[in-house]
Image 1 (cartoon, rainbow, N blue to C red):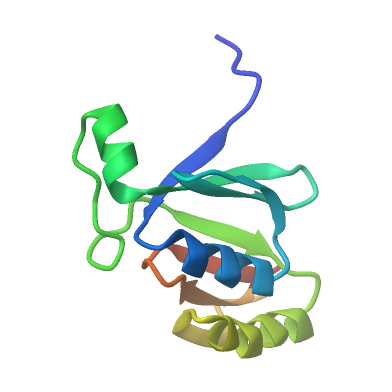
Image 2: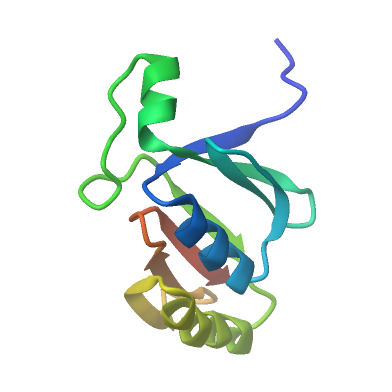
Length: 128
């Protein structure tokens, strides 16, 4: 098997809030419908779809975890410097997110933080 692409499908409760949050952090919009808002992430344009929870649950017929309680995945965003990590730390709360773990050294050569978006989806911002 050779998949052509990979993307994420995550659930949210409020499309307007999610759109505002990711736009404020500089993510590029990939469009919006009545059921989802979508963004490109990184230089390779990884696609992140954010579906209304009820819509995704109805279509995939599986239980979807509550990201405030359990992590389905933790995405890692690369930073070009420690200063960029520190800038993320300032901008995330202003956009409506929560800093889960403040910026710090994670062993030799690793510096980063962990944050959650308004729906609890977790991200690392890492400089290596």
